[in-house]
View 1 (tube, rainbow, N blue to C red):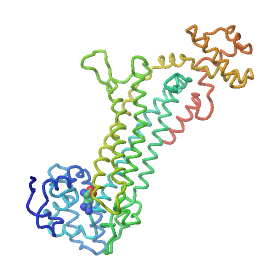
View 2: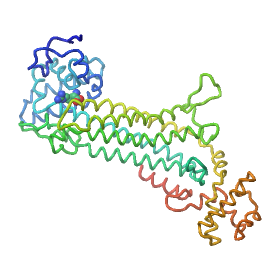
View 3: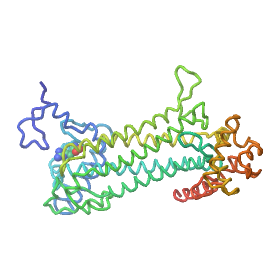
View 4: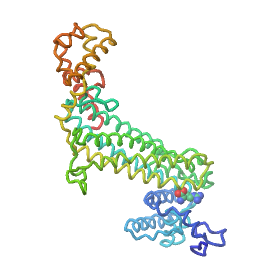
Length: 466
Ligand code: ARG
């Protein structure tokens, strides 16, 4: 047996109801527990709506004044932490309106003219997601700056480049950092694009069909900083693609963060020692005194799980919903709130870690030369200087790698005689391409790892961010 929370019908919509809802009904229906986060957007939207209603002669200037001032009182009560949020009032919209009525009386009842909670929540949520997009864009910019300064510091520091996590060819630290600058740059532009598309106002779409009152949707759109009103009232109240786009962009960004986090975990290990994380972004072990753990990186690596989870959850909620509004859509908010909070935290933690991080130049350089990392340079030399077809050069190089491996040495440690025994066209000049610095300096193709090229990209990014 469940109990009714209250015998009386809902004050906002209970006209046709003889009894109040069952407690379980109230529990499943209420969103105030989480949508109270929309209070500022809700009050902003209501003030714009009331001002428009008065300007259009739909409510009196006196009512508008009372509503506007009353809403500011509600705002300060919420911000002071002494607003009595009530589950029985379901959501932020009805909590605010009900309190407004307590404060100003009868005029409060006129606020909801030519409006529905359907366009109201769509407006509030767009405003909230828009603010978050701005915050994420700023967070990404900070992260890009952190990666950029790492790149600048070590533009010509050599390190191994990997494929399959096997040493492939030497690259520069700057080049590796700039790869993430590019990724985070695209993430930023994804949020900027999403922001542009979401910046249309649903307000005035009313329940679904528009309204017979002579409202001015362009005025409310402008007052709320939207570019224009949405052009179809059914679409305005029923789509959440702006939230899906935010979550999708967040998931892609979280993938990038996760990959960098994984590299930091590997690089900071005793086996690699490519980087040293600052004490500020590491933790110790309660049993092993020697340990310094990359927990922040690990947690950032994991954030993709919940962020992608949020995206999947909302995709599934939205699929198959007939137009227009359905209560299913109330499930949009917690997913977006959680994803946004965690993305912001991950961005801030990654910025902090990157800013503080020390790349160990000597370790990077020592590792850059091991694992036959300049084998491609040797093959390229055979093509360029000895006229061998690339496939033959590849074979000769493979033979030389096997020869060095057998002796437990690296390619530059083979003697000229040994090399010539495999191919007589090889001369002393071969040694100029075998060093890791020569190798990276030769990769001058656009977007290549040569320090000159890396510095060009750093300069381009500095211009973009200036
Ligand atoms: N709390 C609701 C939500 O978040 C507000 C809209 C309610 N609309 C309705 N027709 N019941 O979706």
